[in-house]
Image (cartoon, rainbow, N blue to C red; front, side):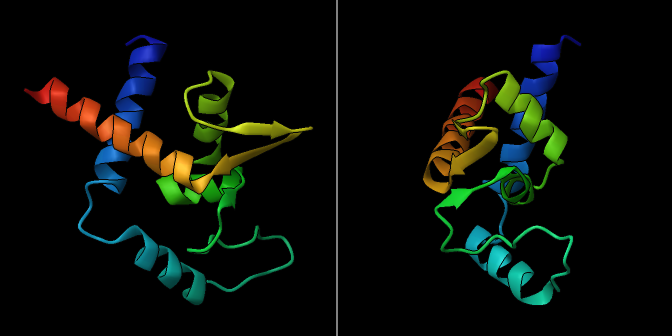
Length: 110
């Protein structure tokens, strides 16, 4: 399987798991935020009100590893912005990106 085909397959899986799930994403994130304890080494938790996300928060939102997020960024396959060495994501842009994949996946299934 080519690298592009593998990434496309992975993205479709993410969409299937995240966008088409029966669980509301915001309530799931809120539950995760209230049930997770924070330590000095853990990253800040994703909250429903965060408009700007970092790599770890996007990985949690998409339920994938951070390395896949970095790979998608490197290939410019996910909407992002670089601020110096840091990578940031707009929650709205990520959700729109996911929506576009679900529409594209539905067209491919016909």
